[in-house]
Image (cartoon, rainbow, N blue to C red):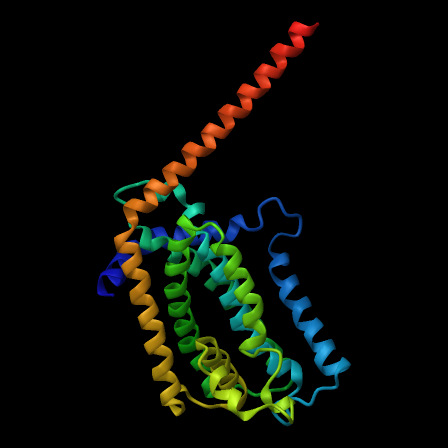
Length: 296
């Protein structure tokens, strides 16, 4: 763990520069550029607001708090988690030219994607705070706690992407599995609904929902923005979250330290296969051209 921190500190300039380049690359060639970064999340919030608040007439989980103010602190960290997981899972393929370098530490690559997504997340957090001001909500001292929960979520994302990106090199369907799990996860956390909204919700299922580490993060954002509760008021959940997260981080680091040579071999094999396919395609085109010329 300390070795990873030394690597990150030693490569901090490279990480930040590559993260900025990744951030800019998303909107290259787009007419509206960075505007697209906000369109999808805002549309998603509006859709769920119309479905639950206007369509189903759902009672807000917290009395006196509009549904949209309860929804946004849950969906903002989820957008960060979803985007970082999808990007981090494919980071070894995207930065294959760095993977091939023996002197480069591949453990840094998932961090680059994480930092890039964290820049976007910071913007959404500021938008969320502005929305609370627009609704007339006064700032709470616990809003500072968002720094802690953002850091905790970042560590969890890093731990998971170390595992998924390592598996993705050898099992290309991993990214699809991650996408499907994220679709289910959005409803299982939960984010758009709460057990309090359903009178017949089985109480026995609530402890099962809390086993999901993301539940801790989402609840923490809502506690910070709405309830004004501190993370140390949930000591057992905090201990459980960090135990699971650090165990996953240890597993991911172990995979990356055992498999760097295999990563490079897999990337080189992929490039070789790609060149072979191109060569075969050009050969077929040449044969067709020669055949057509001969027939004439």
